[in-house]
Image 1 (cartoon, rainbow, N blue to C red):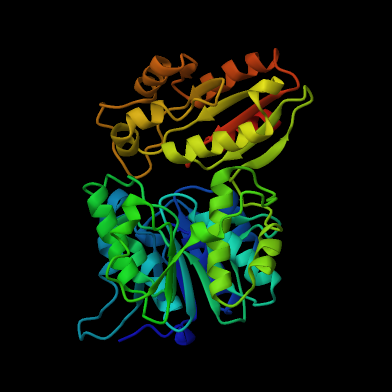
Image 2 (cartoon, helix red, strand yellow):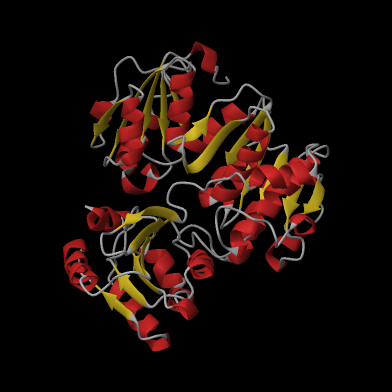
Length: 446
């Protein structure tokens, strides 16, 4: 039996503070449902949800689920960090006679339900999918197409990761973690790039490519896949699929005047333009609208300027390729030749990622003058003692000798506070990572 959202009145979200699942919570509010949720911690996303009238409990437990909930939506991370709660909520779905008692769906399964009856444009890839999704949304929105959008960040100016549109297009960021994107039914698929990541789940790059191939095969013959055909990790993925393959390199414009710096953003823009041109817009119109794109939350986000003249930014980059590309973008604006110094406060995300990509991480900070490391953000993992920020700092120092690691936030903030006394204009401090490094930026600006 399929879930019929029109018959659902009360929805409860477990892990509601997640950037993707929170967008579905917003969608349910927009559709007039009573929405509640719970999460392990608060934060800006939770704060914004509560402003919509959503009751959110901090701390996760089975007892937090309201008695009148007829749909539970949960984050797939719960399988790892709270298997007992995961088991309990999944057991609720069917009564003893085999009929639905309460609907239980993971976030990816909800994307399946949402995307079935829509013209779905799914944006996948190891890097750049958030920006590319938001760029496609910007072009379609400016063109008057009124798309529905779920993106993995808060859109600048909207303070939301969800746009409720009435047009036919559904634009959604599609994450490959645990093959969750295979729940989506795309008419159009974007593959920005494929790189080694999520190696706590995937065996190797070939396993990752196989997942992307499964996704590409889902695109029907009257749809299309946008990618870089020359990329060795992608050429195999798009072989023998039903859909047309569109090379975004044919739409690349190095002279495009975007509001967000960096070649990587111009590549994302090319992919977005490739999509909208093949939906019927002209290249000229698509380029014009993509240049209106203001960026997204935690992507090259300017946080403020200190009284001393120091500029403070925050960025979500947490993979070596992303870090390198982001710092190249900073150097476009703040070059060493003009006397600018860039200090990076980085919090590695996941023990497994830091360990498996240790050498890549050590080489990714070449455009930084100083790299200050916070303890690894463990998220869903357990520390086995084989990797740490101190080990990463030692590896960075073998390359550039400009790194220090700290045992906690307070220690780093104390060090950085003393350093700031000697900093003035032509200094940039960037907090970076997918965890809680942004709190250092908030600390500085206070």
